[in-house]
Length: 416
Ligand SMILES: Cc1ncc(COP(=O)(O)O)c(C=O)c1O
Image (spheres, rainbow, N blue to C red):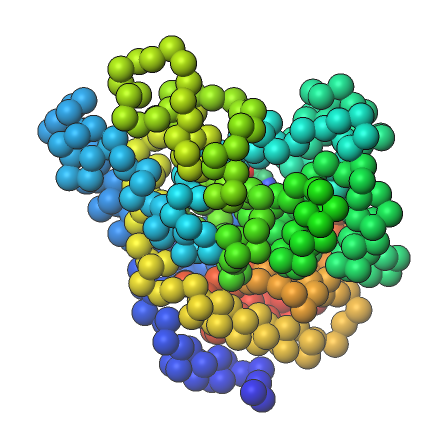
């Protein structure tokens, strides 16, 4: 398609957008002057769907009406409430329903999964992660290594791009697996890197790793609801994700995990809690833990229903729109954004997101000059700044428009 850098052209693209009605389903934050902000921060915190209130209100009403009996008599009984999310989640990440569970928060789930899937031995104790993974993931893998009595220096392999490049090449990951594979216990990558927006080749990395006897897991914080995933088919061992970014379920809302069905009947060690115990006799309060033979067997506690209600509201929109259409629009939005950015004649910014991307475009600012970011914020843009030198912008297909993308470009160009 031939793009144009005009407001009229962006409006034409909006008029042809078959998902345009979903913008009205969300609350768009306003500027002081009453105009809508240019919200490009769904990679950090997704916007609130208008229907969220209704979903949460239903549970508040039922709590008021039924008290504890809401566990069975609420319109959507709380006892199995987390199960109401599994079908939608399984479509979003490409899994069987039995492989998905909503529980806890992201870093907690990362630890729970590593307790089961990082089983270091003297010969095989290393973990591979991106050098610029989100700090919580680095802290988590480092603390797991130390917990098992190994040293970070000996056991952590941090992937870096080649000099002068910003994305990590799959062939370089393959090289490390080839050279050190027998010593590697776990590959633990962000499916979409939080800093650069790079989407990793899940299928290939999983195969390369597993062929060498390595367990492969992904943090999908920036991938779930953003890119097309097929975790079951790719044979990924486990994955974790949060629901407050592309999944729009509110700050700190409950996270989720994927455990491939090949592990459901295994005797992997795990940290157990009563909600992971067999549902048939959970309330007979047995002393001996008997895990549910599905991802649900990794649950610890009975989940916070108000948070799950917000997720359910959001997932109902994903069910309607469908990942295929969302991903197709996301590609168009970022294609248009890249076209526009490339028309700005400047050496002050550089795009570091590779071709393999989702919604997020990371713009490196020369000399880490944050003034540029502060100025676009003053002019109504909500993006985010990540140290040392990147502005991340994410036009999200559910609620962002081509006009948002154009307006962002116009503000950035003016400030530059
Ligand atoms: C990739 C990644 N991992 C981990 C986290 C930490 O999430 P939480 O605070 O929900 O544990 C985040 C938060 O943004 C993230 O982006």
